[in-house]
Length: 223
Image (tube, one colour):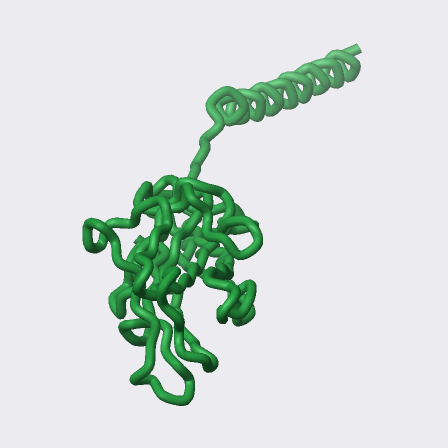
C-alpha cells in the first residue's frame, strides 16, 4: 500500500514539474507573440532624362517654274519637322548664307534682291513687288509658326506659281530669324513648319537668264 502511495506521489510530482515547465515556456514565448519587433528602410529611385532636339533634313527644292519673258512669278516649299523632349520647348530659325540670298551660280555678283517689307524686318501680307524690280522672299506656316505669331496667315504657299495673298512674307537675312516656337515638349511625331519661297520679277523688269540659288539654313534650338 505504501509503495502505491509512493508511486502516486512520484507521478504527481512529475506532473507538477512538467506543468511548471510548460507554463514557463508559454510565459517566455508570450511577449514575442504579443510584441513583435519590426525594422524598415526607404530608398529613392532616380531617373535622369536628357533634353534633346532633332530636325529633319528635307531635299533641296526647285521653284515651281522658270521665269522668263512669259512667267513672272514662282514659288517653292520646304518642310522641317522638329522633335524635342525639352520641358521648355524649342525655337526654329532660318537664315541665308548671303544677302541678297538668291544669286547667280556662275557669278555671285549678279543677284535677285531680297524681298522688301514696308516696315523693315516685319513680315507682311500680301506679297507685292514693284514693277521695276525683282525680289526673292519667304513666309512660313505651321502649328508652332501660328503660336509664335510673326509669320503665318495661311496654310498654303499659294496656288500653282502664285504666292499666297494671305501669307506674311519677309526678306532673308544672314542672321537667324525665328519662325516657330513652343514652350513645351512636342509629341514623338514632331511638329512640321513649312517655309514658302517666292520670287517675282516686276512687270517692266527682267531677271538676267541663268541658274540662281539660295542657301538656306534652318536651326532648331532648345529653349
